[in-house]
Amino acid sequence: MTDTKEIHKASHIKKVAAVLLLVFSMWMAAVPVMAEESILPDGKAVYNILLIGSDHRDDSWNGNSDVMILATLNSETGKLVLTSFMRDLYAEIPGYGTHKLNYAYAAGGAGTLVETLEDNYDLDIDSYAVVDFDSMADIVDTVGGVDMTISDAECEVLNGYLNSMNAQEDYLPGGGSYHLNGNQAVAYMRIRYVGNNDYQRTQRQRDVMKEIFSGMQNLSASDLTALAETLLTKIDHNVGPLQMVKLISSVKDLVGYELVENRIPYDDLYYSQNEMLVPDFEQTIARLHQTLYE
Image (cartoon, rainbow, N blue to C red; front, top):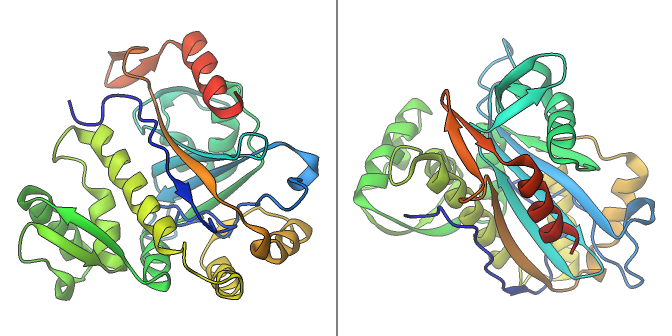
């Protein structure tokens, strides 16, 4: 079944940007990097930033968090781990009770989502970075777009999302390999009902992130710094000013990291109940911590 197994693909990325785009990487502008002495903010060996992509469309509510990726930078192992948390995960949300995980952001914003993941998975999340549809599209355009191969079925749904985004001029004629602009990439990452539902959607999100990383590998240190400064204006984050100065000044010291993909729930460690995915928390936490911290 497509994308229902834990994926541990590794590839060395030269000059990985000091800022991890999410979003959808998207969000790249807020992640610290390993300098010469491998010192992360606050002297940590492992730094976690939660990358959040919301479907926020107006000021009436926060929106749901359709993208929740924990980016873990481990300076001891030289690994960058991207862990997708699926939207329908069972979660005990502080102050709100039991709901699907993506309700945490809708109910209380990034702070509540961070607290929920920390409580449910015994994590220490250092920072978060948030994008919505518009800011994610801007980020993809800023980095020059991404290359993707799209099926006919995906193309049909993608064009439907472009229509809802009033981006009819970006329609694709059918399946094939394309260099996607920002609107097209956002529509691609939203596809849920082609393939294996949200399992495959989280894979699409990680695929876009990997393309962004790959496209940045030949940038000079000065170009990376300029890009980071531009991206910072497009992201809602809670990285402090002193941390931010360090991040921008550290871009030139970036080295290659091994990129590892991960997804919660793990295939063999959950069951479905009332439309929610209920993990075996004890075993899931143990495996997750092993992957992040080794």
